[in-house]
Image (cartoon, rainbow, N blue to C red):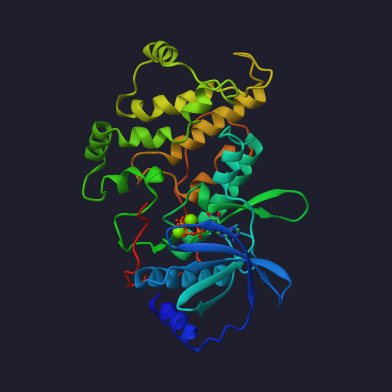
Length: 357
Ligand code: ATP
Ligand code: MG
Ligand code: MG
């Protein structure tokens, strides 16, 4: 809240750079600045330092990032159990606000690219989804909306033993629940239909019609499928039905009114096959069950109507996530209000801007 932000601002004024960070290499570049891998001689460890561009709008938004991340780390995830990046330090250096984070691994986009966009094994899809939902549940408890969830902002995290995990990073576009800060949020390819179309302001029916007209949501939902190269390439991880095959299959089914449009695309996932040693129709039962569960899971996440779309908590009880047997479409129970620990007050502050990619 505004007290938190003021506090962080005052802290910065009085702060002397207490530590010495030796820059080793650049890790990434984003809208807000650059991220460098640095050696922290005091703790004998690597840290990732995000150096914010020195312009007032970026500074203001970065103050939000520091304030809300501190709140999340300290009050909502004191034991570092909920897959949210740890902030270690922040300071001013030559008029740049700098934020030091724990050093994490590759981001998911890099990982997918390295794998020629063939996707990840089902067990990782499940684990990572579960962990991301866990992070989102905590954020919701804190009244914080990330606003920029995308593969580039999900990093591989070292975990105890050999298990692989992920953490959510980049709280540079966060906003508080119930407050419109900027209506132009989320990176373009992942923007939800209501943000694309400016909901509220239009009831869902109009929203749907407009989405159909512009074809934007069609494109949006399309982004969860393997890219066209993966689809056509000989090394493709999946076999996708051709347009003709889909036509033939769908013409036998009644079109389910207005939901036909997104469902038609989702259904394709059911018809995908791992590329190794599997011929059509020869998918092992367990994998078929996984595919069906995954498609049903995605259905609730890409629901057009934001009021019907599953909350992170509701989604976390889906059989795909819990590992229970999938027996048919999942119906989430009404969310019982949890009692959040020290819910953050609403911020009356409009800095920086959303994500303008
Ligand atoms: P965006 O354009 O998405 O808003 P940004 O300027 O806000 O980006 P970040 O997303 O925080 O910056 O970081 C940019 C990139 O730097 C990340 O995608 C990631 O590859 C790398 N990076 C950030 N934090 C870490 C970290 N803690 N450990 C390792 N790499 C990191
Ligand atoms: Mg980012
Ligand atoms: Mg960002």
